[in-house]
Length: 238
Image 1 (cartoon, rainbow, N blue to C red):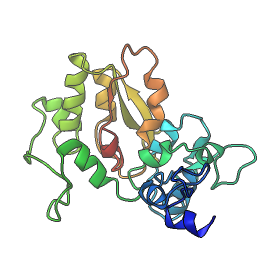
Image 2: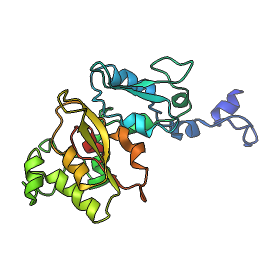
Image 3: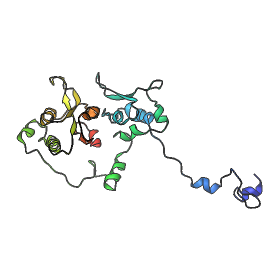
Image 4: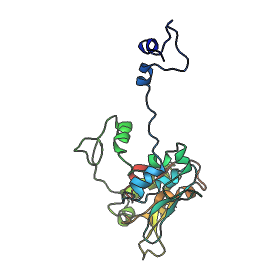
């Protein structure tokens, strides 16, 4: 490039544009593509650091079925199943898939994004529970639901109403394994009042209710469902 070309911003002495050369102003205004946050980041920042709560949200949304879920020996974590790749790598993530990180409620700061989407603003410092209009203390009116529920049976009442009024076809819930003596929660599908009664109450342990999603599709006429908040991350999925 000649001094004359430099002075004229990549243009020839006659003022014509030089093929293959971009001007400095164009380079300065071009935006850098957003970072594609994928399984590698999720594994490093959540799965292996103690932030993962075992909700299995990343497993369910994976469009390539390369994430599995472990729930034995007290370990409730997702893992990579793709042949030829290490535990922290994913060929689809390398190609730009970000489904797992966008589904995870513990990956970086998702609260401001969801608050902006739902309420048009981020939560304030004094809104630790999130943006809300009212705080209501309520319980079920059905005495049976009150009896089997943990704190008044409100969630069970909402699910039962939704089922009986065709708002949903089924609900993803948690049941106790076997006779309940182990206190291990297992994901399941509730389609009747008896199912909801059997699933009533809180589980003070891991319960990846989303793992029952595929079972919920059997016999359902619509994809609508509900997930009671037995497990903190599931509040993000409702």
